[in-house]
Length: 265
Image (cartoon, rainbow, N blue to C red; front, side):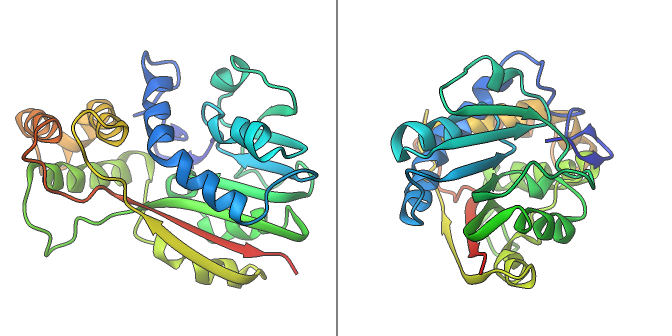
């Protein structure tokens, strides 16, 4: 999704869409999280008759599953760069290349507005949550998911934890990523005028050759320069962490995905 950060159009300084393998990296994340996302959206009632907006739709895996599994009426998939969405058309899927941070972003009203791993990369998060809430029709629901960092000061040192701390610091410095405010989602949704607010956290297991392990390895490869610039890790440290992920010795918590939702009265 387009964003006014120091990294250019949302993160292109680190995650350019045209770089070989970027679609595959996004899809590894989808394999790790889509089942959890879909279970939540269907539990909230997503189904026939629902018009949905998927913000930062990536390669469109959630949008297509909403259409194919939940049977929703339509999905408008919005992203900063729609090359991956345009390459995989589907009945009921509309694609819009747009800047969600723009003051005039207003593609209509929807029963479901969903954004996953988007707002953590963008500035003006409170304003954006209010703006997204305004796109929810009465009786509809806003669902937001983003990462929560579980590598705190008391977490045992592991090669994984060292590199993750460097990654978060490096991404904050280069493209503005900030996950520190994500636990405030429920209160921010309530502040945006939504009711029946709730939240949950999912932590996928770090297993050798699992989608989440491959996602992190690919993400670290793309963000090496940003991580090195922090002084917290060097190339050898990144390589050690990748080998650690691929081994049976890995004993660490992946970043969690916090999902929060609220209903429009």
